Length: 276
Image (tube, rainbow, N blue to C red; front, side):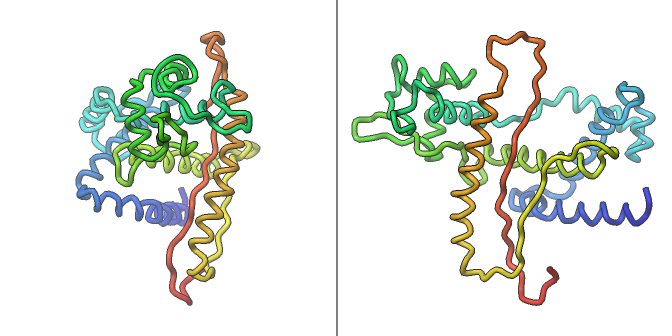
């Protein structure tokens, strides 16, 4: 890799790492712990993605690529194989359930809004929604989580109302942290794909609209605009994805692909005269 390209990649890493390090420091995680995580991921990615003719990369090649000695590469490989990474417990089930509540014909009123439903019993009920969309997450646990984050409320008779279409955990909640990692990882995958794609490979859509000279008094107006327009766009995307998903009774060998899109709010304060 040319020296100029290397310097650009390192500069880009600094930009990527700055908000991540802010999160690490707020969580009491020192640089040594992050360095151990980085070492593990180096070995994991080199082993998985840089083999010859589709085979896993051998230890010697991983050591040469990463600069980590062979004994440590072997230890890290064993660590990866024996460590089960945490996953967002409620994210998939909660999102599927809220989407079903908004889109399933059995759960939509005549005007298209989600029905007000009972907690238990036959359809329409939260218990039935969980059977349809909740996977293995218990209905009581999912109901408690969705009520805690304000996605579900209750009317005067104790019936349940869908207050949100999306599941968003509380700030610095463990679930929200894992979802945030997935979001940043997906964005990074798209950027790296486009940067490294061979000529002729279709690029993935990644665009942003930024103006560094907006008067700060309009920041709240922009937040509300993005929430309204972004949510409407994502709901159209969600409808399309749901219409094109593989049916539950499809053959087990039918190929699937994980598709989606993300929208994020960009905001930082810059003093006038700062680089734009």
